Length: 409
Image: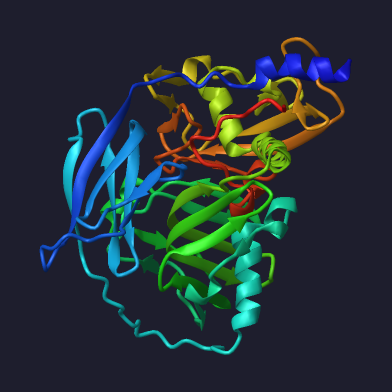
């Protein structure tokens, strides 16, 4: 009986992602200096499973492109190029890649022999220490370059990276992890990030010599990551830190998996998906928060008692949906409490029954007057952050933008 009910509930929780026209993009990739075609360039839609490589003549075709999106052009010998596409973009393009030049910074680097410790630290921060993060692993950690820099005082100094167009910013404050995209302000400011720190700070940075490959064996994906840089500031204690990661993600599903393995992937993906930033944002976009187990609450002052109380928040007046995107307005610098209700991992439809004892709490923060989410659950403008528990899910529990839940067979 429970199994039958679960199948029925699936009709409610599988979000009806709206169908939009898909296009095909064709083109060629050439060397900016030699003006010669570049074969074997990896081309993909950022944070999806959709991608291809250029042929021997440097030509490519990429299908099933849903707009708006960012398309990444990646090659180990060239600088990464990212092009944003919308409804007005050309669908037949020529792309020039600049040969990569390795530059050495003029900063003194200490503790060069701590590679294994640095690798362990980075793995925990980047992949996570939850169930998914512990099983995920780097396939080619030899491409990682670690710098541990002791600085007496760099409070207010901006960390500048060059020659990239960031598509995702990861930010951690007080051990709370948030997935974000780069803001237009950061792009205009040469992609600089203000590093808050005090006089006892340590700067831990990670760069790569090529694409970083991450295996997600529980989810059945191999991640190709163009990691632009990872920067962490440690201030005083081990638990007082903040970090930023800028990069692009291409999900490659495991091919030819057995039926048993495929069902296992399906179940693990569902577990990672529920109560994630993607699940929440899709629920919000489709106006199905309560159907998917979410209640939003905000603090309001009771004039009679002089105490703050939690009241339910409705998004009706603060969200405008247009096509594949929705704008959230009027909530700058606001934070809301998220209460998520579930049974056996499955969301509870709160329109039909009251919350159960299986509750998980998170927070959501709005950084701009106008914040953007997309139908696929992505947040392209770096304007929304999540606190734990939603924000605690890291790369090890990451799912592609084109992931859609499937019912168990």
